[in-house]
Amino acid sequence: MTKITKLNLAKTGAQKGFTLIELMITVAIVGILAAVALPAYQDYTIRAQASEGLQLAGGIQTAFAENYAQTGTPAPDLTTLNLTSPTGKYVSGIDQAAGLITITYGNAANKNLAGTTALLKANPDANGNIQWACGPGTAAKKYLPSSCQDTVS
Image (cartoon, rainbow, N blue to C red; front, side):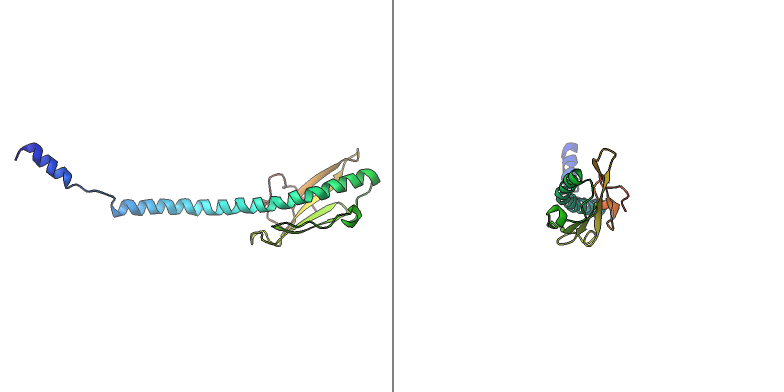
């Protein structure tokens, strides 16, 4: 047998596939990535659910601002604005009392968001224009959009 034939025989008997340690390292890396990605995705979905409340409150904000422009005083409740409490897939109700809109999350909302509130407060300026402050009531700040991080009381 020639030297080249012996070399070819040695290569054909070489290892094919992955070793156990290579597979274990790959599984560990995938596990670490999943451990980081899942909580971040959960927070993302909760923030998306929380934004529904702010969208539903937009109609109340508009009606409140129009009423304030006409009367010069804050509307005491939704009935004065000829509105009823809107609900959504993640919002169980929205109430308004003298310029403070309270968004209550429930229905199909994530368990970390269900039963909590977000607040919108009307702040009239010197010209009678309404500026809105938005912040958490009982909801965690991290679950609300970045535009809703004010301190509201």
